[in-house]
Amino acid sequence: MEIEQPSFQPLWLRCNTCNHAWDDWQPMLVPVKTWVAHVRNLHCPYCGVGAKQIYLRTAPLKED
Image (tube, rainbow, N blue to C red; front, side):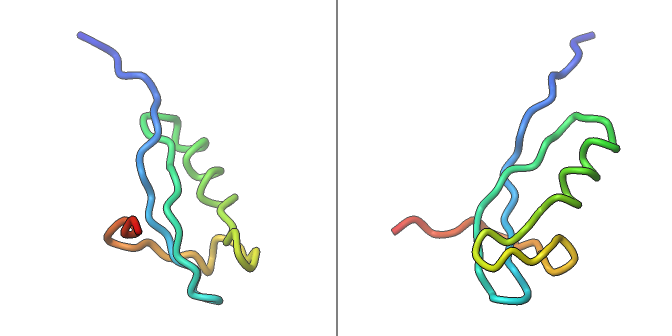
């Protein structure tokens, strides 16, 4: 049986305060404590608002 290593997966986010959208990364295959700490530490890179005002999007940003 092969044990999978921790990795990062894409995470598509939007700020509910300033409506800024960005693509980020989330850790996968990590202890729940690690994942929760990561989510609680999310902040909008534009206005700085905390995780309670960060929403998930359903698709990545389009490349120009």
